[in-house]
Length: 171
Image (cartoon, rainbow, N blue to C red; front, side, top):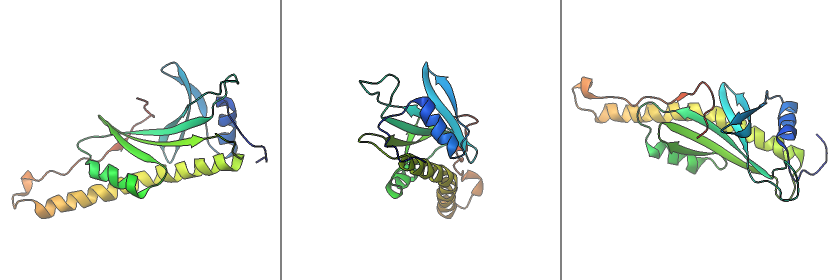
């Protein structure tokens, strides 16, 4: 990686940077807005550009990683809130029928290419940690319901696990 300070990026330059660290990335149009689409650990995610520079054509100063999971059944907000309390960078949010994980990255003030790479690595780690976290938390809930359930087992009903959408979905 170079020692050049990055003050902004284009979708093409960000795509190229992600490809140099091993991601397959493509530019796609989503609701008439171009975004980058990639995946890690079998989860598709989008990279949405944010604010443009006033003096530069096509240059952006921030972007948001976003991954969307379908929710089948109920996902207690305590599970989402616990994730947000335990993780510093990526945030979860429940949108009817979906669980969204997002993480913002800013170039404001200038950043080194290694900073962007580190942000990509943090995102990758968060995405890979999400499913085991959800499984563990939902298992705890299922166990608690079984312990507190009445003797008649047929009435106890476990929550359904969220499952990954085949493709990233953008609200």
